[in-house]
Image 1 (cartoon, one colour):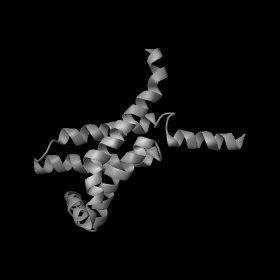
Image 2 (image 1 turned 120 degrees about the vertical axis):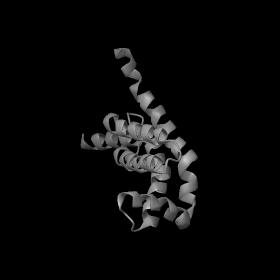
Image 3 (image 1 turned 180 degrees about the vertical axis):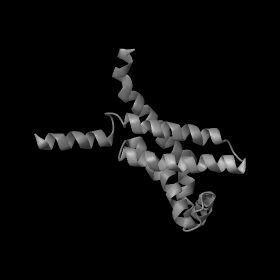
Amino acid sequence: MQRLYKHLDIGLLIARIGMGIGFLYYHGWDKIMGGPERWEGLGGAMSRFGIDFLPVFWGFMAAFAESIAALMIALGFLFAPMSIILAVTMFVAWTGHIASGQGTPGHSFKNMMVLIAFLFTGPGKYSVDAWIASKKSEGKN
């Protein structure tokens, strides 16, 4: 079992790239390019939580999470905050599927769980965050 740990960073790299690019391509690109009209419709989902104000902002944040944040997860840049933003977006999607009875809540639930797990693993050594940390530690020596 111990021998598998030497490949942990490669596994994290593959998971990050798959999750990030998959989100960007299959979910985020159309939403971020949809503009304010599309964002307003997306942001309306927040009314389930009693948040009826600024639907364009909330919709933009969902589009941002599924595109820009997803790309940043793939790169391993600002990994923890971007994972949180996307996990929260998946929570809203999950509850939306349950409340509406449309779609499959399992997909957003599984994505949310992987993103939460990412918070405990970190991005791994093949990431922008690790590269920045190494440059900072070199500067201290």
